[in-house]
Structures are given as C-alpha cells and as structure tokens.
Length: 96
Image (cartoon, rainbow, N blue to C red; front, top):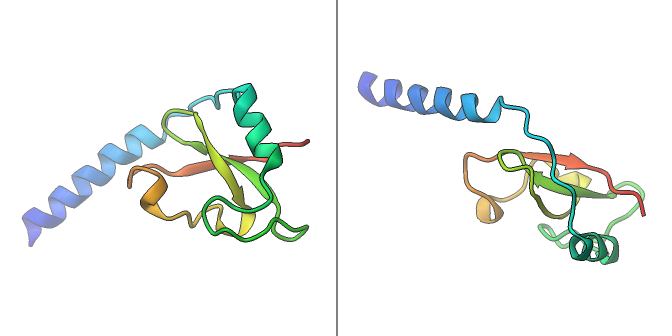
C-alpha cells in the first residue's frame, strides 16, 4: 500500500507542477467568438443560460486554448469527457 500511495503522491506533484504554471489565455478565433456569442445553453450540462446561471468561456488550464461556452453552475464541475483528467479549467466571462 505504501508503494501505491507513494506513486499517487508522485503523480500528484507532477500534475501540480504543470498546473501551477500560469498560462496566458489565448484569444478566441473569430469563429469561436461567433459560436460562443450564439450559444444559448451550456455545452456541458445543456441548461439554458440565465442571469443566475450565466455564460462563461472555458479555457484549458495547460494550453490556454478556449474550449467551450459553459454555465457558471458547472464551471468547476465539468465532466472529464471534454478534457484530459489532469486538466483544470479556468474561466473568463466574454462580453457581447
């Protein structure tokens, strides 16, 4: 069990080292901006955007690339189907 725990902690340190690097967010491409502005529901949970559940732009924390329009209620709970398991998301509100 000690070997397993040591391995998990080693991987955790490696991931933390990668994610602790502050990556600049890359600007959205014109097509991404259009798609983001046109989105009326979250690409992850499929709920409509509201004043309480507004639209944010999700970015890959490692590459800085825009991923998708998402609702604030799922900002930090995105399913892992859209990203590598070790990737956290940062958000940026995009004004129309």
